[in-house]
Amino acid sequence: MSQMTYKFIVASQKANFQDTILYKSMCNHCIDFSRVIFFGNNKRSLNECYNEGITECIKNGIDIAVFVHDDVIINCDDVVFRIQKYASMFDVTGLAGNTTLNIKEPVLWHLLSTREKLRGCVAHGDENKYMYTSYGYIPDRVLMIDGVFMIVNLKKLPAHVRFDEQIPSRFHFYDLIFSMECSLNKVTIGVGDVPIIHASPGLREMHNEWQQGQAYFLQKYKNYIGKTLTV
Image (cartoon, rainbow, N blue to C red; front, side, top):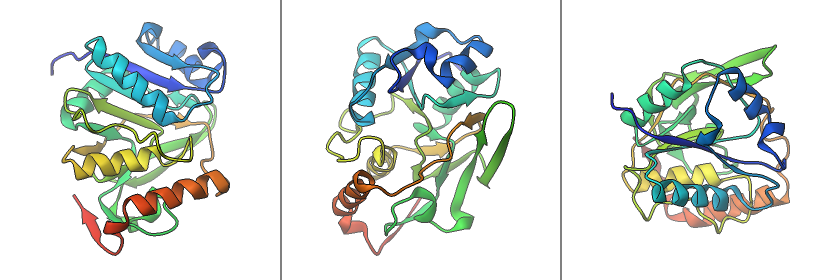
């Protein structure tokens, strides 16, 4: 497997990367911080930051963009090997996703499919105490992935496939719509085994901004409502 260059792309409401949970875990695993593109004091959508990160990576000849939340704890010593491994296996890789898709409300990736069609594994908690949720087989092809940790092989990403900056919710649906655009444009998506701990319980409230994002998603993909999409 050839060595591919990579950058972690991180957007945070914290001013300094050193104040994030992700930074602390990178220190523990001796990850080179020059490999990080950090958007601090961020008030923009993840879509805007991630697209800017893609542009910067391509400009500088970087092969892989790794989009990761700032509250992620990396829980393995060979994360760089795993990133390069899955970037060779799939065009886009996440940690959890689904192999079939039925668009309906609520628009949550794990509820847009049946239980047996889910794939992947993610841990939640902190570095001292955490619990794994196993969704299904890894590695495997999927249609849609959760956005907590996404590996994108930029050499395989078409120029017209980017994060949708028109989504009215800044921090939601960026991953689901990106997945849809990748799947509809024949970009292969998969889930892989990259041990991380997400120090967040996930979505707690379907607030107004989330509802606006859901309405946008349903309108954008209205032609697929009532149809079953599969890999």
